[in-house]
Image (cartoon, rainbow, N blue to C red; front, side, top):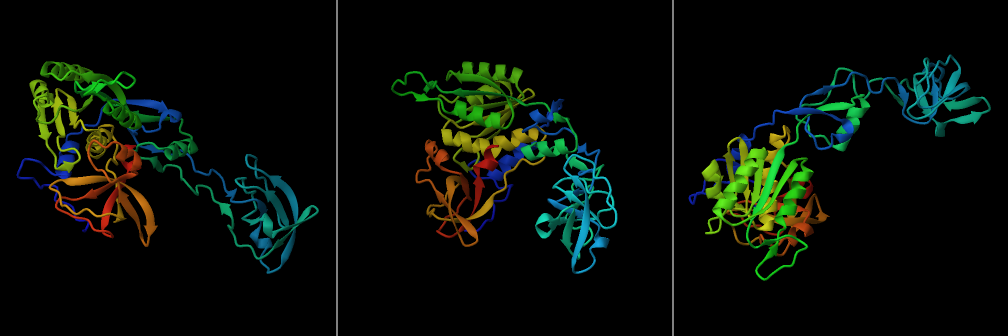
Length: 417
């Protein structure tokens, strides 16, 4: 099998559309929120920058030593022999470097300012202390072991672009240039609820024919990881009236509605009709497995994303479609996960009509590519497969997989956060 993708405009004769087409369709309708706020950098994790931020300073703001040793003048160290230099000062990080003259050296420590007159630092392991002097082997090149001013950042440079989703390293970078507050887009308000008379809250007795509602907590975790404001409406009765009422309430309070269950074609699946009664359904049925009954629509100005009720389908369709949609609405510029080529440590003998995402994890590294194995049970009800797995492998429509084939792998880290 090769890594060729189904064309984005491919449409299936039974009315389903391709994964690429569905994602492009949904993302094209993702409107960036307009509200912004200023937050302290300590509260910026996961937030999306609403404007670019420029450094007002050079980093570092002065030439400093890259290691513990002695600051010297290279002009004193031109010969291939030891020079005996008088140590006139001891410079630590946080103090002024001062000045050294000909025949002098300064004891210096990592990060400390290089004294005026010095243009090189010799590591302490190469030097020998001799009373108030130091013996330094030459020659020593100019600039050796010195970090020049502006080595990392020059004043006026854009350090944090608009649309960047803040990670811990960007928080540190903001602090390094003296930024204490950042302009970010407001949090996206997302309403969630599940449909299904069979659903029971964890902790309560479980009668025959009932199941615990896992999707509610999966969605809570997914939305929390994306920094959304969650409006949890719980479980809604499996009737058209109750579903319609819940949707209208959610639309009045949220930017986006995400539901699980009730979106298929069964007699007790009322979500499509409920959305149509208050708004419109613009997309339904995607050629993806797990997760064919996926819907996008709108109720007034509120976006609606209806996910399947099976727990693995809920997780996978959220990762593939809802996550990039919500990130785009939050103003993020990078929203799609990047797959990695891996070597199949399994066989997939039956070609499917839908693109499949099998729960997988990296087994070992052989040769140039890591090997991926899949969970033995790939049913959309097998939630344990998502805990065992470290990601998913993509199996395009109409393809089989043999041991050793190169396939695409998406780590959960890039799909969930």
